[in-house]
Image (cartoon, rainbow, N blue to C red; front, side):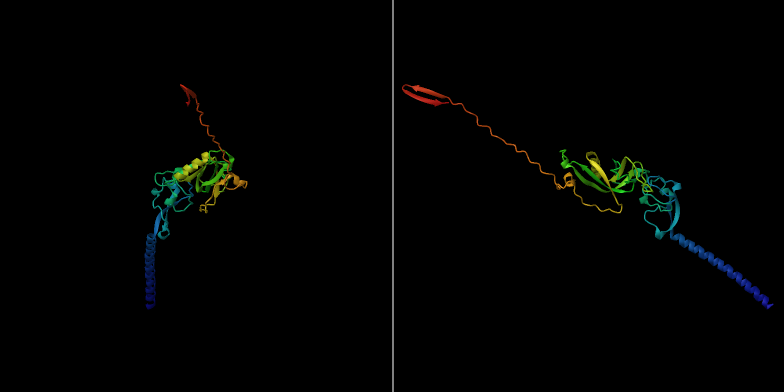
Amino acid sequence: MNRTRLLLLGMFALLVAGFVSLKIAGIVKRSLATAAASTEAQVVVAARDLSVGQQLTDSDVRLMHIPVASLPQGVFHTLAEVTGRGVVLPMLANEVVLSSKVASPGEGAGLPSMIMPGMRAVSVKVNDVVSVAGFVSPGTHVDVIVTGNPTSNSDAVNTTTTTVLQNVPVLAAGKKLQHDAEGKAQDVPVITLLVTPADAQLLTLASSEGRIQLALRNPTDVDRKTTQPVRNGQIYGLGTTPPVRPKKVVQITKAPPPVTSVYNVEIIRGDKRDVAKF
């Protein structure tokens, strides 16, 4: 009898212990979930790969919970904040959408949304040579070199080549706003560059008054080099300055003084004679 009672008491104790353990586990789990929720934030991420120039829709983005400590600056917390904006920098799937990667509200999509405030987009005509065999594509950086005659004299000795702009971003090649994923050359008639208003004037003048050439840069090379204009004579080792032409000597001869006519008049007074000159 005592043995049976002890077994029943033991089983009852096990049931109570199991029930209490389940309750405690539930409480701990809920506490951990609450703590995790308090350290995470809901942010907008790309639902798939996004290319430059496209306009975001609800299907292009989604929400994801990310630890608050890992959040970068410029995140969005609702889909309504990003839908309708244009993409200015490419994004991969599940990448956090940042304010620096999308256009401002109301700017739409396409090339205009990629022009930062205070900057201008200027297109220049190119060929295979000017566009570095077609490898000048969106996202690359170039230097602009111009060759022309800085004087009114058409003599070839005054032909000069100089670098007018350095480290200029390329916005578009033709109508393409996206860099070729395989790095292939693109045969396009125009290249669109991102420049300041002052540089836009300089670039327009250079393309109209001379022949421009684009020099492709490594995107990590941001240093500006000090360059000197190169004249035609330097190619042939004639020095850095154009030869001095002999000046024409103009001789000025003075006109002779005018000849004054002299008249002699003889005056007779009795036996006296006088001569007067007029």
